[in-house]
Length: 182
Image (cartoon, rainbow, N blue to C red; front, side):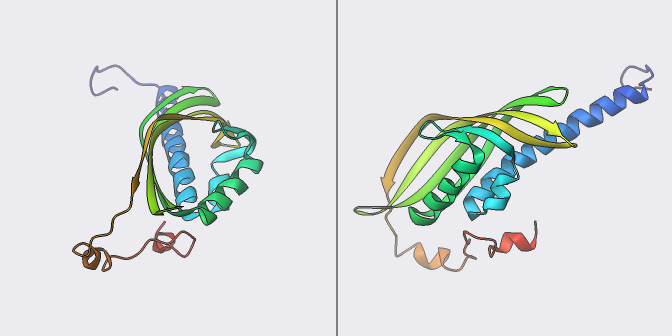
């Protein structure tokens, strides 16, 4: 019986509710897997969020995931010093074994500029099409949307440097301490 209505709830209804909650959580986990993979420059982790042959459209690149991800690794390794991608405002629409989502993404990309270090701060969204195959949700089509961006020069502070130097430094590889935990 339902605690709220006193009406019996069928096993089928319970299964549908559990499946929906599980599906939504798997989709959110995959979104976070993508950003962790990008920030740690972990090609295998990034690939695991996408079905083979998935299309990725970032404007400057529109094609199969297998062509896009090696470029991401090269760009992140050669042109960027540090990155941080944060996912939020995730909306998911489920439709059987398919789904669509919109997720806000906030990126801070530290780059090597002509005049020294700079930060590119980007706010945008990932609009994804998903498919559940063999019980696993993965993206089969992504469009990245840019809402706004800004750049700024990196200015170090002799007052702050001693504080941040005491914190464990994040690494852009599987050597990062987080891999010991998750």
